[in-house]
Length: 444
Image (cartoon, rainbow, N blue to C red; front, top):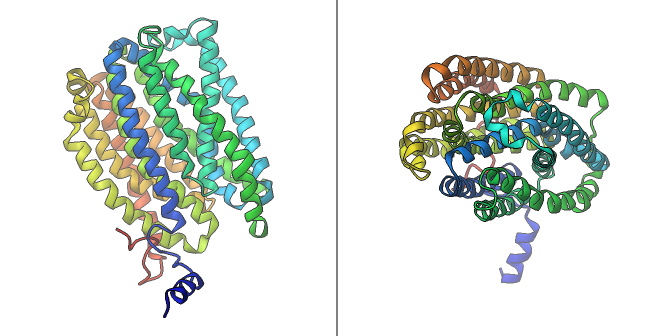
């Protein structure tokens, strides 16, 4: 056959649905993982620079404000992200309205929550004292609103199968905040950590917002017009009732614990804790990213959910086992980059978090299966169980064991939920056709 004939035949043959690197499940997931990797490297650089250019007390103040910002923004952003991943793929011509309403509703609610936090600032401990005053308060409120929109945009891009833009926006954000951190060290020695973070949000949220609303959403509406299945109001409400409840529990685990720790320990100890939980949280995002992609593909093609679930578990095992082993064994060296004080105070904590990251593979995959099937009442129940165990043990163990108590509390909660999730995932995985290769499973 001639070269021209070969090329024509290649064009005529459709690419295998499960060709390595081609499956939407893995393409979206890998884009999000690249984002996690880039954010991890630049985020590590940010906190290393903070430890070098700012006092431990200043790092404690800044990390406390960032934790509060993420908590308040997450009240709606985290609770709506799952719904966007589930319904953006199938909303057709209603996608733009769904996204705009999510942005506007989130902005209004988190602004009210941030206002309440600022009015009660005296109750939250000395780590937040630098936010007193009209200008710091206004800057904090704007940062909370912007962070909520930025978080939602990641969910929208994932639902649009355009997650490749997520690392682009977050790389710009991470680079700008690192440059500002160093530049502001002399001029803003106390608030510089938080100010650099807050100002950099605009660099990502504004251009990405324009891209989403003016380019990607209209394109998605045209491409999916013939196969759209917009959710009925009752279906959307039922999904949100369970998913939002579960997300609030998850929010408490991820963002309330740092606020509780900041309120109970010294600013220096909070610096050790926050840097450690940031490192662990970055590793956890690898499992969360795969789960988000699994939800999107489950919404697009429910018939392949079993196969995609098996692929997600196998691929995440290959990634997470070595990553967590390195984190566990190398904990003193990872923390040593920040200084000897960080190694001494938080090595045990980071090792507990490494164990927890492995358990999250099972829990996040199962949570994503539940979202894809719109069975969010079970999701809420399990996340509530995890939240109750973890928060209860954190309050019990933190005063007795110090920072390592927070790590033990997280692993205990995850172990309980992972056991339930593993039992319930078994029939889903077995539903994959026997002898069929999992999506993307043949790639290296």
